[in-house]
Length: 274
Length: 145
Image (cartoon, rainbow over all chains, first blue to last red):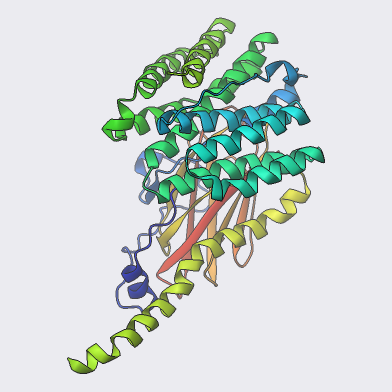
């Protein structure tokens, strides 16, 4: 999430009333009228996208059935690398793995993932801001305080993304989001395929998020955009988008499986040594 | 000119002092949004740590697209750092139909509840209006259960 970009002089001018802010333009909202046309919206569009955490989808799957989350936990081996793009993707992926472990209420897996978070944050040079959250995850795991762990994983990701953006590494911040989304979506497809229903499959209807990631990659600097893994992700996201756009009458089991395969292939690449 | 030079450190210090509270206000807006979230947390809502924020001219509408999942209940909390603000906060589905089921306003925050009828992209539309301030700091957070 981008922080509010206030410039000192702008703040000064506004606080002292020297200049006015943007011209006031009232929203064309009439009480009682419920129809809304975004294309005719006269106000300002906020482009920032808050990507849902995997737990948001997992909580619906829990309401629809009794997924075996333990089966969904993956033993992640992270090779040593100095490739920051890959490290950022891995960071997002491992945090999403943490949400799976929380859903499974697996204390030992949460602790292992907490340690991976520390290792990745160290490799990214962000350990100072991440350590308090990682420690809170390890402490809460001992107490099996699942809601606190869920909150800390969310906070960890936010802290890393904020810090990257402050360091002018917005592209890497997007990589964190993408890694997390791919891992979360992979879990969702796996659970949905095991106990298929139209309601659970509908959870994959996320074209706005996929479009957001595709656009984010398009806007990235050459170094990150042309990274082999990011190029693979761009292609994979387009395949996923095609599946979503093709699901006009709802997702079939095969289309869910196909989305899962794309995610899993990309996740293997993210975890690969090269 | 010489007088300005000798006063320059004092002027800069004054500038910094004036600016400090302004820097704090976006965080204040989020704090008030979180105050609005408190009763919802007691009802089992999980608050997301990421949120939207910024500054807007009084009365100007803002629009945000957001993914929601059928089966979850969502709550949105809009906070401001400015006093005497009137809020308008609504959520619409893809066809432009309002789906807000409970909207409430307090002095420094407003809330809206939503039960998304399907898993899709929704549009959150809001504005803050003040008779005193031209520019208003805002933060919009959400939670689910």
